[in-house]
Length: 258
Image (cartoon, rainbow, N blue to C red; front, side, top):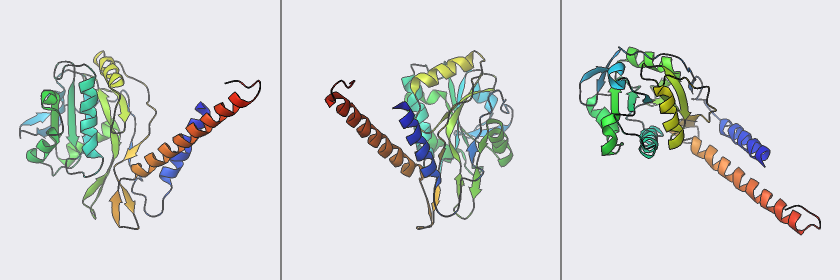
């Protein structure tokens, strides 16, 4: 059964890649750079309009780093709430056990725009969250350090980018990655504790989510991953039906094992 599920996931991955038209995902990825150090002194502005640095935001605590942009109308709106939910359920004290940083990849986003991202976090947890914006140089330096490869699409005034988070140690070293928009609270808790001890994790198996996909039929960017998830769900349901049928057949066969 396990082998069958792996095959179905592989097929779903191929199906997710197969489409007609332009490939906006070209060059877009979240490369894993465990052990890399992020720039700690580059200038940013937070959602209150105060000048700060990533080092000041981290504050010598293990940190969850989310990159995206506030104006995104696709999966970005889910990543910060997903990370906040996992942290809330992890049983950790915000501001004491961890910090969390949202870094905008759009250098045009100001403090007022960044404040909109803060509204996606439960009020009790906002003490740990820092919404940062910077100029193109600062943003790209941070993105390069963590392997966050994105591209601006001027025709659509939007960014193509991956979805996921990086876990940083208190001194700004990349420890581990999580991919997607929803995260297991236990895994996030363990990763933060390991990062707090200065330990660097290994590579994480990834199901990479891209924020949008160009649909040549409509001329718009759409959330392509939804189609992939529908395929995965359908294949898993089919696999469960086949597995149940095989169990029933074995039970009815004389001498068959249940």
